[in-house]
Length: 299
Image 1 (cartoon, one colour):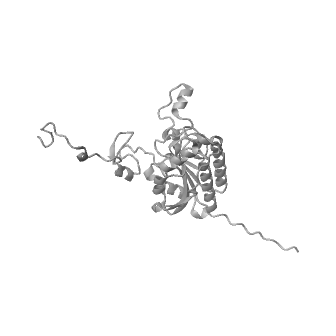
Image 2 (spheres, rainbow, N blue to C red):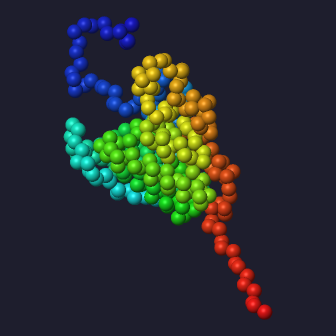
Image 3 (spheres, rainbow, N blue to C red):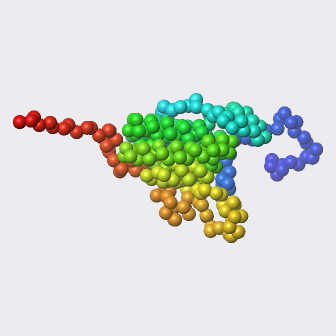
């Protein structure tokens, strides 16, 4: 059967005639090892077609999923980090920022925008893990604070999509201050009766979990997302004991009462629309009108 078995020996194909499979055509699920085409994987919103494993995606993909026709107005898109501490590790902090901006096409680890989701106005801030591990620096805190102010000004619901390794060590105390700033802004949002939905994705850890990620009127998560403060390895080394199976997974956190529900990425837009429509009608987002006061004439 020479049509599939090479009968003659010593035949060599020149390098220029060899055909290589281009990179990026196939996706192998890290969980169930199923192989599928990248086109099919993207069509399935970067979730495994067999086991529904949720691959990490960034703000570009989340905005395309949520905003109607992928139309939105980005807020504070050119805000970038300074170097308040003159921090240097293997390279100066400004060089690290510039290199990461060039590699990712992002200005920092969060993007904020407003638009419509199934016709309902909404303001969304979304973190990008590709930018220094989604670390929370002064720009991240400032952009989230400004996005919350925009939601208050326009009377729209606010949604935060978290994906972070925690505080950014290059900014030390400036990074930790963002926990208090964003939490205070969310308190103002709550006082005005505007809903806040927090979506926790893989991974959501450190100071982000300890602040705005867990302060939602509704805390929701994607399946299998790692959610916690310190990582499982650090906790295990600290306490010297084996951790429960699935510790700090979204399912574990839901079971212990820290989440409202888990939502599949493919159902996220409709679930969010249903949730907001149940909370209040659009008219309720309008500022309350001042009541007229009758003044009686003195007799």
